[in-house]
Image (cartoon, one colour):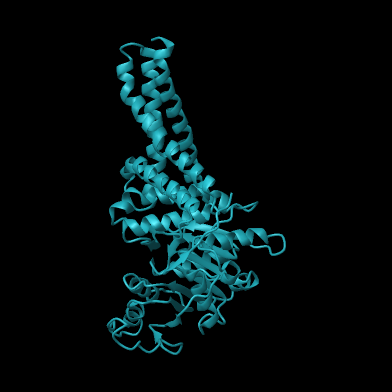
Length: 434
């Protein structure tokens, strides 16, 4: 075959080789992480820390979470941890969130909407439910200069009785669900690994179409930016935490100024981790981020529109509001997530046809394509399986990657056009950075 005619096939081979190399590295890092890092489930078999189980206060900031917060409350009631308090910090709620909580925590029925009836009396510090002390803090306004969730978390610590003498503070999102042994296993791991902050990656639900087709690609993009092996290394760890679950030693939390230190940030978890990294020389600390092996579940978004807005917010803040960075991520996502895997498939399919004109070239295409596809399926299949989906769902990853790249481009365009971020009942104007 003339060289000029072979150029398109050589390009396909090069792209397929690139895909094999890229996903080979992904597979190696996934396997390495699984072998070197424990999951939360490993903490179930660990003994209590020396001196016994410390007092843990779970703080849950919530804005209009009526549909999901009851399931979280039930899972917290079921915790086998012997020394637990729970504070729900309700941030300007206008729905039945408080009624749903009271229905679970003290057996009361959920009242009609607050607009039609007086608000129910507070669930105070003296009321207990099955050994776990539940408390509600009502946040009726959010000051200028604060993000809503960050302010609610701070108020939950400042204004509650349960958090005052807690040795450990655990911040959790309202849309999470805890395994009965999660708090105990996490505290054991925090002490065993000598950490000051332990954060966990949840297993996301997969009921809606976008949760199966797009969400794994969205999560993988964030983990690509913050690989667990780099986040958990002892020398120069990458600064990252997941706000769905952050377990702090109280001393560290107070020393850095708590959530007030990052009050203006919409992605308070990564902002806290970055601050810890900045002050490492004057305030040494260790943090870790682990997988939960299904012990923490989360339904981040209930519909496509909220999914779209939510992930754009996450990527915008993760990029430090830099449109150029977002567009680079979008280009990389299309190349690694769509072009390279598709090139591997095309090589394997077109190779037998090319053999009719050039057998060596055709066999090279078939071999390269099959290796590329096999490595891709092995790597992404492992990641999809870790999220509770079958490995076969890895085959739809290119579609998800294409949609995620579109979200990254949208986020960049929103920044450039001055579109405000809408989140938690407020609008935020975000400063664009070069």
